Image 1 (cartoon, rainbow, N blue to C red):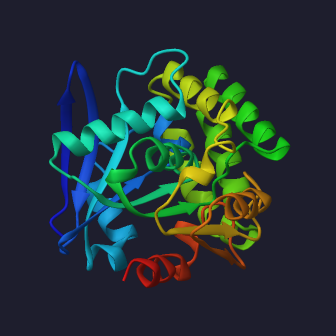
Image 2: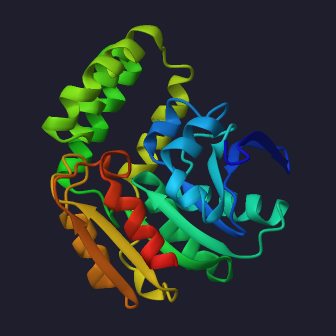
Length: 266
């Protein structure tokens, strides 16, 4: 489906799982959120190509995980440098870049530190600095992941990421995933959570020069909608779109999300 492939990059002693799909020519890089701390994108090429099928018809998409060798104190800025290195390794001089949630934090640094790599930027359900709400959510998930209670962790993530209406639909699936799954690497989710808590790009956002689309969700119960508005104030060449009837998982919940991205990138 849409030429979906799973792969692993090796670069200077580091390895990074990534997937690629899409029948278009222009490259679009997607940087996923904190869920990457639970599982990398390994083996998920088909799943991503179905989720993003509208974009897959127009672009050649790369979804990069964080590297497999995360160390304590690894920041969102370090993660952005890894994405730039991955792009270089794959001979992607420049691309459209979309960061979702924690991926948006990484994408902010990518656009600041490697401006030549980012042609257009999409920041979805993300923030320049975590709000009190975001801190509470992330710290709670950190605790649940360290206690090894995967089922409670998955249900809590789902409950706060989806709108109430969608949560009823997804709850059963998350319940099953929670029962069957396990946390493969507690250190990984802990390091990634910590990097969200210490993320602060407010002082450098004015350096972002490329056209930027900021997508927020009115019912975001993880980061909150204020984070999107704060980004819009700080980035000069940007459009802000707040989607109604959407929670933090708006990229899964709302068809308007991919339509807005296509409209912006056209």
